[in-house]
Image (cartoon, rainbow, N blue to C red; front, side, top):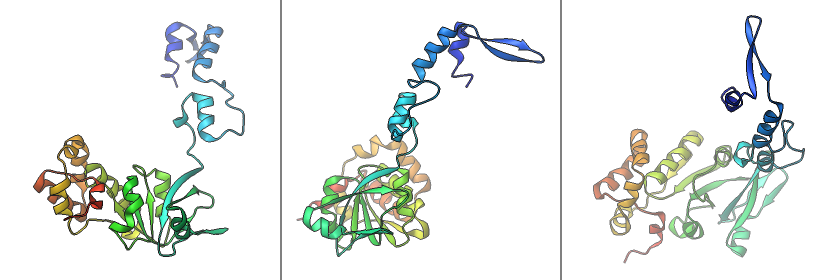
Length: 255
């Protein structure tokens, strides 16, 4: 806190004076202190009015949405197959039925009453593969679009599902492998695996690019240091050809 108030000491708005065997802080310029409070805390020291959502409250108090409490609910987009449903104590969500009718469905993940799914769930970062994941891996019961790295609360949500097996379909580059390792570490009892097609090396040679390795060289070093066996197998192929492969390469027919 002293560091945060340092500018007030520099300008003399706050001063330290001796008090017995120690010191106390005295306000020497009240107007400057009030101005400083207003510049740092838009809603004053008492904070925002009650009832605001967490991110709005953080902007009201600190001008920074990231400084607030985590969101109470987050949307996820999923697709379901083979009769898959989401379930919770107060209802059932017909995921496969809605996917057949509308191609995808969205739900809110809430900590108090989270939806759960059973079976094999694919995690896909990019939208195109998300919309065609069942053609790449027909055994999926459902697929979730991560749209990048999973937030911690979504990762905790998946880890708490007792009847789900995770298959990670990400980019075959340092960032994608790093994210798989993060998911693998969070899922109990080995309930996550990396999807690697039988023709991966052929696709890598034909459609891969070396720039993906160069752009993420720092991440690659971290992945190498702690890579489990399945990731090391992929890294060996990538090293042999000096290339990485975007996940959209899985959708291209090999003729």
